Length: 426
Image (cartoon, rainbow, N blue to C red):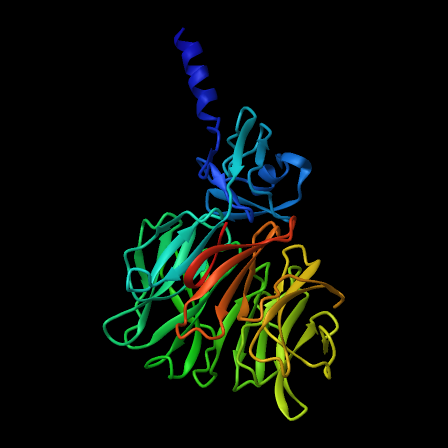
């Protein structure tokens, strides 16, 4: 019996316990994180891992944990099955002795936004049926930004030195902490790096009218770094490409939108004088941007496209001489359609939202209310809904409403009145 017990003990010590799923619900963008009890041979895991519907995915490792990110976003309300066949090995050769199976629910997306209904700017959350709650008691919030997986919210918060610090909290408003102390500088314009716990931001020295520079911060370690080593390079409005491998920055010193491949170090500049955040296509191969031109004695903005593969610039929508002023566009997640705010020259301030296909052909007009300025576009992760912000032209207040347009029924629903900023919370 002693010998049998010793053999069993040796066998058990050579086995690994099953991994643990750290999140039982997930957003439409992913990802599902498995945490192992030891550092793993990554190929042995990748060869044995599969998810339901034979969907393609990529794996991102961090220590003993691996996160599954889908190549096409999941549908709200669906169940994702995860299967890991037995035999995955740790670095020291210990094996997981049996299959691992789990199911994860894809949650319904929500919206976060800022509202002054309490007298001060706070972060609120709303379901698509209009049920609301405050996420933070913090007041004087300037902006918010949501991580790709929807688990973390970064926000810029005014401090008592005339600046704004960067804070972070989880999707439920808990675990709040200051991440970057900015003193009398204003830190804002947050852009999360996909698949990483990092984001880029602009830091305006001595207030919003000061000189901006772009920095990055590691959320886990709190380490911050200037993006440009040369302190003379002014930059703001950072935006990561969808796969996180490139970063765009508007820099008047460099002549427009500066693009850098973070892996290869290659860079290019798109000439434009309009301060703006670049709009990346979902595949990361095209950048949409605005350029101002003179038309019939008036300045108007037109949308151009920069093809990274061919290094070519062309008009993206409409024509240079059409009688429309274009606003910041929004690509649908699958890249098939683009939503764009348009204002007709000579037609007052009214701005409506039109849909175009990727070739620039008009699909439909989805707002038609001349008393409003529409903009602030953002697609839900699965591409079924488009968030729209509207502001009444004759409004004396700078508070807008949030609408959601449904792709399937073509209807606009008023979700929140008296809100501004914010984004989807997948």
